[in-house]
Length: 515
Image (cartoon, rainbow, N blue to C red; front, side):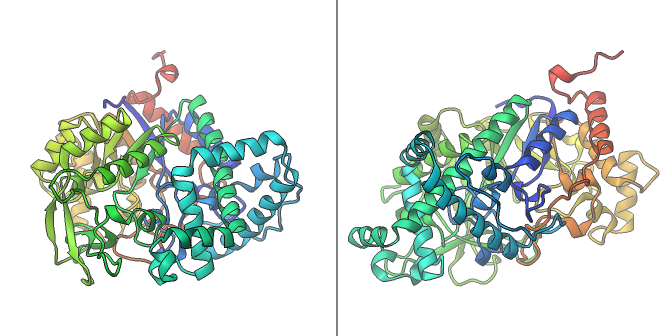
């Protein structure tokens, strides 16, 4: 897949500004799309849009479902404009702050969505009811499992299905039928929320497409144990047949981000069957994932791509990722069979971490664009893979940083690097000034040969370390940053657009004629 010479912004939906405690699929999302167009951007990259849970610190990479949408993103404004919504929107005490209070947001959204559920089935016309029925039929391949899982989790007050009654934990068909009847209203309410989420999402995607903005989605390689996916498809995971617990878990060995590695704790896949051939059930499930996500975004960043060549297997019970083994992954045959099921893959390889020649061969053999990160470039090695002058394959995405990095200004002005490194960076950039460093690094990215440049919103805004999205290896304080109204100004948009003009990154229909 060949990328155009263009640029875009990385901003999680939750991080959009707004008056309801966190970003939604409402007016603020449409205004951001307008801002992207004004700034000459062609891409909006987002983080995973799936449900989040307090038990996993609201991480979008540890969802209860790889298929469901995060109903916290549902817009109150858009709901209030539905003919069947009786109004008014429940009282809102949330404010437009820089950080999300998930507890307060959850409380407000529960009241709002409960009201919307009642209003819909009391007031909706035949067309809306037919749309709901059609959605449920179309999405039944995942929706029934997710709605039952969510309802059971609410009943037992935990997403850990191993703590549920044994018969339904084991998904005994008789127990599933009994619980489906007992929790019928809860299941219907869950399906309704997903209907509203995907209706609002489809409208936003259509708008972005009309504005010339392509959406880059994100698919984590792994799913969390406490999810509808593992509960419903446990045969494709490396679980103990007696206890249901993972036999080994995911992570990466010590690296740039952590001296003890990253212990993610997700169950690993059964990539192969007992004959050594690729597991058809695992292939089918991955095909469903890709086909489903492809309906919501234009391109898909596949997280931890190197895990498809070889993955780090940590024995169950280990507290850190230091002890483990590299196990051979499914490789290129997996992607070829996946493409046969799904058509063109349209994937971006998140090829960061311990990258070997074998990983590069897999990426290039599939003709997938990879990623380069400027914050990784400056180690006094002029052959560093991430330095702009060493980008030998233009078909890649170049980032100032990612959601796992510090903000550019937080990194440059903080204690992650020393004064000697700062001087080296400025010398490389040909700069005598330490002011506005974020603009200096953005400019270095824009003038590189990399096809696509993606800038995290915090870097565009020049924010410091307090506003970083995630610190790998930690739990508290992550995934809560959001923009406030007024943070993104015409100055930001005009400066970015001018860089696009100078460095040939504007969409074709917006390019300046040079006069």
